[in-house]
Length: 120
Image 1 (tube, rainbow, N blue to C red):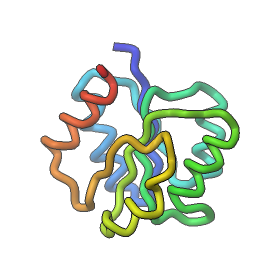
Image 2: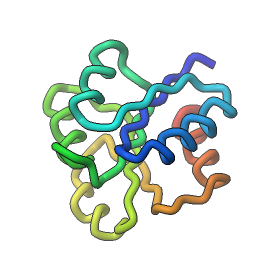
Image 3: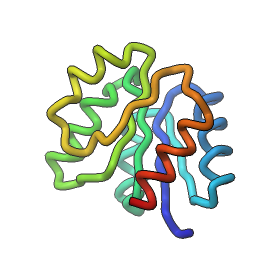
Image 4: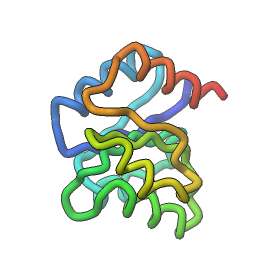
């Protein structure tokens, strides 16, 4: 599979866990810890899926998605948060958001959603 996933999370442990999950499913993965790095990664090559934490330094996940959409990027995105209901309200109008992971997330469900979005 040549599908690419970009992980944006400021917690190294979360990035590492998601990288392992995604690689084990046969996908390529890149990760970064903030929105500035995410934009640089996307400019180097648009991913097929973004998994972004809501609470990030500099710009939160919703601000990153809004900026991407304003630049014409409509990349399927999963938003992660410990406050999922609040985040759903804030991101409801964003076209790119396809799903949410509540932290801590279930690894089996995460694999299922990643596969669903990448194979759909």
